[in-house]
Image (cartoon, rainbow, N blue to C red; front, side):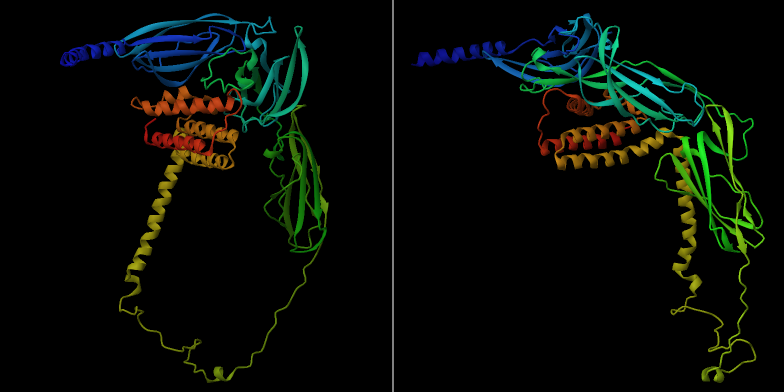
Length: 594
């Protein structure tokens, strides 16, 4: 028995050494492409696995014809036959834009103890049922045109946008605009509206055409280029997809029957040459109208007394820049008093109304002077003037009223009042000096002295506020920086409202709006320029945790807004946790110097 125990003690260190040796692996990194063969309408997953070590997500070189986006990081630990191995996996989504054979890499992967250069191969073939398509633009594209290529400043013109989808492709969800519209020089962004659908044959191929149009009005002259970047969601049936595993969050749950793929469409460029309004032969009665208009005037009442008001009602209707037209003016007359013109609401968006009150000063007034309205006719490139009036009125003299003298019988109290030889009756003699109850003159009191300082303080506050306002008007980036927290708080209220209603689409839309508007204002970026890469490039160096959180938020939101499979049924608690993460990261960013 003792011999057996001694042998066991002797074997224990050996067994332990063997176990440790079996458990220890050299650090390594591997690259996987799943799958390596896809169709033009499919997508693949590129995974970089750091085995028994850790490493940051490497940069992927740009590949013509492929869109490669970082999806996120995951970890994995396995034990097989007493052997333990751990993995840190960085995943990328690979979306093809054309067919062909592609080499991705070399990708430089650095880890503790070494580095490797890895490459992957991907073949993209034509989609099932469409053996002619070589690129996405063969199947999906957009075209833009305008009804006026040389409008004048403030003259409205229409942009017509057509989205072509090859027959058999199904679009889902909303159409998103991601830039391509001039940000300056136009009066607000175009409000696009769907005008209908049709079918067209182009080079023997049938396309379903979705038509939109938007109205544009420029504020300055010059050449404006319109090339909108449009994103649509294409429905891809899951039965035709290759499996990527049940645990792949990007491709939805196992039971989903279809998924959607976001596609950014190619579009032509429509240039519009906006001309200035000519100064020659501009009439004095021109008030900014460009288009074709009608002018009507109504005066009432026509029989008044001197000093009584007469209302002049003006109506301008037609096609053109009605919002920029100011009211026509009435010629001044010493016998007529003119009041300010006021705008009157109208039930139609094709007309504007004004009212002005005039008062005849005497019965010499026989008419209200004529009123002229001039506008610039863009079709004939000349000025047109419409004159209404004069308007006859009957003014009678105002009735005169003489002064009345009322006798007042003095009362007993008035009879007993003693007159001191002056025209003022004193009830009590006025003191030579007014003092407060405690014996201190009122103008020496602390309260009065404080009131003297108050205007100076108010003036200083107004001065500082004016300086700040002027600085923000000049420094647009600083002004948007101040606007960022307020915009985030407003959007977070919409997120909380969506959580209370458990409305997941509205929740992710509001969360996306919160991030894009905050970083757009904070980093002084245009709406279409806010992206994960743009935000990460501005973060300070020691912000690895913040970068990972932002990456998770952007990717998760994009996945849910344009994701695949059936919508996930997240609880209110899960949505609240995402909102809490968003709030924390925005508060950290507020303390950073971006």
